Image 1: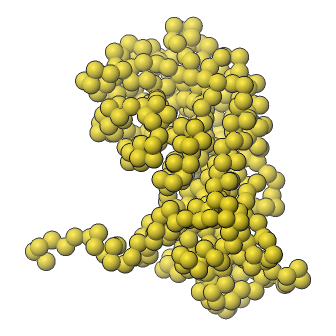
Image 2: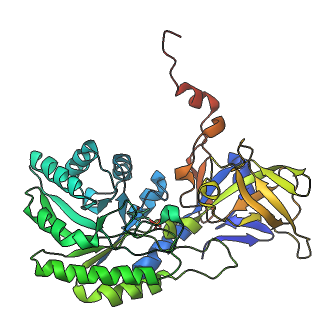
Image 3: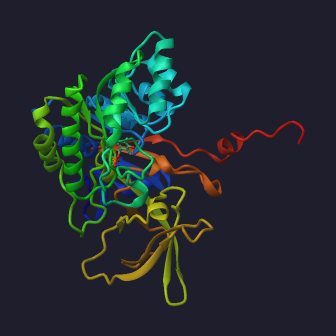
Length: 421
Ligand SMILES: *Cc1c(COP(=O)(O)O)cnc(C)c1O
């Protein structure tokens, strides 16, 4: 559920009409609903109630400083995947003890930075990483708190580009090698083994792969305890999917996910950590764009909008579907017709939707792409010298620009011309 609804025929974010934001900041722009972010966090919190738990928002889904501040105020931890994300989380006020560092390739600089800055846990993905982490921690006179990311060899049944828990994926330590690598970890002086980590993929719409993976992890945790390791924390990663259309069957709810966690892992008495990104941010954001014009082609028509693949790359990259709706609600009897919705970038991949049923829309009319709050703004670029689009946060009847659109001069002046030219 989100807080983007039509009121008196106009799409609103909470109590703010989208045309008011468009008039203030221009199009295209991202708009987020604070209440929706909060609600999604609370759903997870309630789903894990009764178990010692920590929800670490995966900031790679949406890393705006204001969003991080909002998450921090809710008491969330943050899952980071780079030194840059760590620095930004700290800048938002998140204490090191609430930051988890994930990722398949951490550099020396990133390891030193985060060890010195303070960190809750490293999710370690390989033996070389374990040794390097130990070495750097020793050099600093510290011990690094570690969970090993285990690849449980489970098919997440999601898009190939976001499936991470099969043995052929680059992620984690194969579960068959886990006990051996834990033994090595325990022998390293700069490492303190605290738990087990996994993350099997993103946009999972079925609980069965989670259940299989969690059962494997439960058995592993018991075996590791038998081996003498003090396994006290289980990090289950993120990955719970969201509805991208309002028509298809809905993915499982956090409450149902929590029930699976309880059933498969509750008996271990471990602290449960999860790293949701998409479920918290995805349906908390829209991308709002204007129609440039409608172009009649041979056999098909094109709706050319002022947003493009550089602003929202998911359709081009993952063949992702986004519902696209007019900001002014069509009258009940309005005839819909199929049309291709495209951006202005010179690539055929710059297509948001093919033969989508839409009401008639003319120049300057506003459309909203739903479910754009996760992996939207963070994956955008300035391809075609198109400025990064603004991000706007709504809270009830107020809104604020939380990232402004850069001017052409700002963009141009970031480049430096060497003196010999
Ligand atoms: C991407 C990622 C997440 C978040 O995944 P969502 O599908 O957005 O919930 C969590 N943990 C790790 C390690 C990730 O790489």
